Image 1 (cartoon, rainbow, N blue to C red):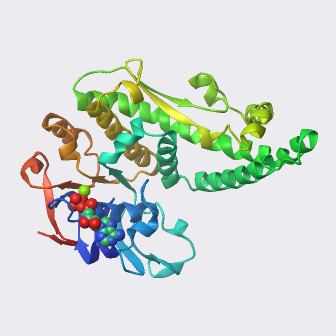
Image 2 (tube, helix red, strand yellow; image 1 turned 180 degrees about the vertical axis):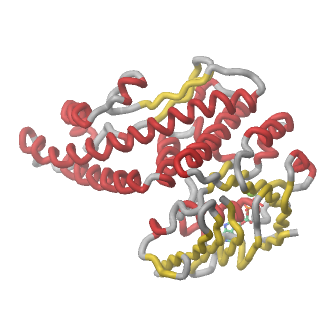
Image 3 (cartoon, rainbow, N blue to C red; image 1 turned 90 degrees about the horizontal axis):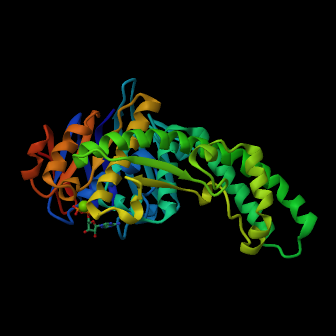
Length: 370
Ligand SMILES: Nc1ncnc2c1ncn2[C@@H]1O[C@H](COP(=O)(O)OP(=O)(O)O)[C@@H](O)[C@H]1O
Ligand SMILES: [Mg+2]
């Protein structure tokens, strides 16, 4: 799929821009601090309708402005749609093909985009919540059931934690008060874990192939889901049934009482990437972690393609400066199973590795197709 037209108003450092875009490689060129990342973030926002990790929706509004607006014409293999949306203090408007929608769920995921950014290195070495949010945002894009199950899970978790925090409820009364929330957590939680497992199985395959291409050497790579519910091996963990989840919750009550919150469940899970038998978080060099992070994003793109049949739009922010030229070349060859790519760089020099369709020049919050 591809974005045919992009419109941003009061979005970060853009006052107002309209760009006519198209398939192929769109090169976004400009000096540092001009708005290249912001342009990609605008596209990413139209895909997910939420900020990226570390950025809130309120950060996206241009300083001093009351709202921002985004719009796009998106061409998929089956249809062309027009999305526009406006967010701000007391403002929230979502329009899909001319008709107003109540909720962002009507437009979220229509544009399937994957963003590669230098911060992705945190996917490997950062806190577990970053990896969980990576899993969730990938799966949510293609699976609306996952979205509702996760919401229901969150609600049950809040209720269960509220019960745990009340000192006056203890003993049998406590077990009884927790019971309905245990059931809800087990029901929704197993779904979340199953879907995460599906994705990670694919990610493992993608990493084995892509990591070798990017690094130029075969590596023994494995990804395992580290579950807090069943602290066993990969296979056993994955076989977690609702009953096993319920048992674990019941067994864990004393610890939860001490912590005054629910200490097991997909909200505490993680995944572990092993390269040649070593934990990537601790034993990989900066460059290797970067490569692994790119491979995880490639897995995200692959997953979206497999689940929807649509080739996602790739947003590659600063990949050129992140990867050495050998890697850039291999990267150019490995990930172009897409219809539209945006690549940022400060000059045209390194971009000659790519078959460029369009150059977008960015300067102090203005952008034009050259
Ligand atoms: N909400 C905002 N309002 C106004 N300017 C912003 C906002 N958020 C970021 N900026 C500005 O955008 C510029 C950075 O743009 P960015 O896209 O990161 O540049 P680069 O071209 O280096 O990728 C900075 O000057 C920053 O101050
Ligand atoms: Mg940037």
